[in-house]
Length: 209
Image (cartoon, rainbow, N blue to C red; front, top):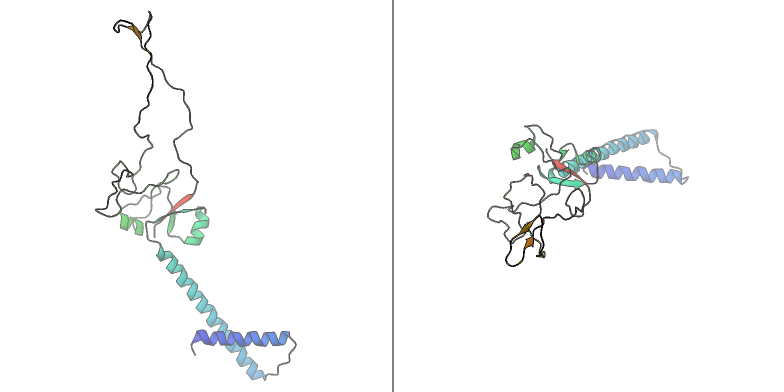
């Protein structure tokens, strides 16, 4: 019988004896037999606790290894809450510098984490060599991973009517049979402090170790 099975069996016996005593059933056991049973129960509990601890440690190691270094995740948890659950290998994506001996630095050749505060993420045009996106939805700029891109408007134009009028005075130019007046004007300003899509604010973290 292996330790796990033995521990489970002893625990079951202890539970049964406890329930019988609680129900008022009298159990007659010799002192030596009781001492032996108590020791076995204690040993069984210790084995069970050690086994449970080993399982939890294995689960933690697996969870940490499941996400590769350099991964970026979004979370509703602040840094202290996230680090407590995910482990010390994660850091905020706030542009901070990490150790040159960290796995992130060794693998990527970078010591500065991307600064994603206030930023949207955008996929590169090419994730695998030779498989570049060229269907019109690609990024017009040739960029490398981690590159920053300024905000901008797509080139466009607007149609408008130009009215030619006659008259005299400032701004009058010769134009065939009738004089013409030129005038430069600006549309009124409208909008907010930036151009943006609808969004939800979250924290970003990077796996460093």
